[in-house]
Structure formats: structure tokens, C-alpha cells
Amino acid sequence: MQKSPIFLVIMSSLIAIGIILSFYGAQLTTQNLTVREEKLVPGSLFEITTELNLSKGETGVYGILVENFKKDAISVTVIDPLGNQIISKTVDKESTEERFMIDSSGTYKLVIENLGLEETQIVAGVGHMPDNFAISVGITGLFILIVGLIGIAGIGIYAIRNKRKQKLS
Image (cartoon, rainbow, N blue to C red; front, side, top):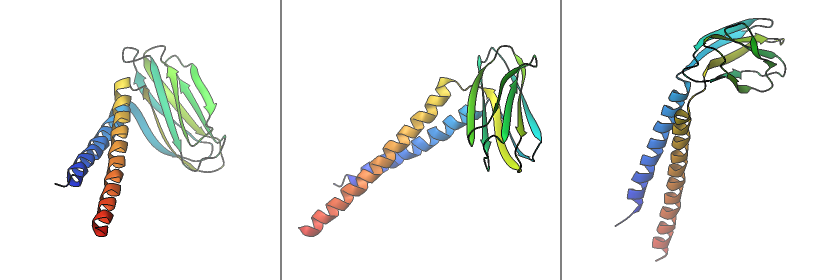
């Protein structure tokens, strides 16, 4: 009896499970984020506001993805419900994520400004930091996917070697 088809089904199942867990983990991670996409002309800004509650967690997070990244062209400010600036900095890479402490419940603002000379596409989100379960689901899915892909490669190598042995005998 050939074992290759059985292993192929097992590895294919691992790949499918890995993909499902990865997507589910990504959905769990981003479900509590307020996300917005905007084209910013030079000198303009946009705000994302979201309600953050201390009972849900003490850590907030924001993430920014900048298309056509130019150094020191995008400024980011996080403002708490009392109007205090928690974070104020220029973005130094294409994709930026930073955590901040939630000191009081209320409306937090993420303000993004284009200080550069070109129109820039921005995708930004702000919200509560995802819990460890959500993060671990995505990481587990990735590892299962990698194991499945390595298994498929191993099956391919095994099948090729068996074909060569059969041709030689």
C-alpha cells in the first residue's frame, strides 16, 4: 500500500487548518480596531476617534501603513479624553505600530498629518491591544501552515525518489 496519498491528505488538511486559523486570528486581532483609509494632500490631516474603556484593557495600540513612504513626511499624535498628547512623533518607516497606556476611559484621537510635499495614501487604525489568545491563534495557524507546507515538500521529494528507484529496478 502506498503511503504518499495518505500523507498528502494529512498535510493538505494541516495547510487548510493553518489558513483558517491564520485568518481567524487576524480577524480576532483587528475586530476591536477603528480603521480608516485616507488620501492626504500635503499640509492636510485626518483624525480617527474611538472609545477606549479601562475595563477592556489598559493598553491601546495604533498602526499606520503609509504608501509612497518618505522619511519625516507623516506626523502622528495620540490624544487622550482630557486633551493631553500621549504620543507625538513623525513616522520613520512604511508600517508603524505603537502601544500606549489607557489612563482613563473615553474618546481617544489618532491625528495623522501629511508634512511632506506629495499626496500620500494612509491606512490607520486605533483601539485596544488584542489579548494574548487572539495573537496566539494567528501564530498557531502560521506554524501549522508552515508544517503542512514542509510536509508537502517532503512528500514530493519522497515520491520523486520512489519513482527513480522503480525506474532503476
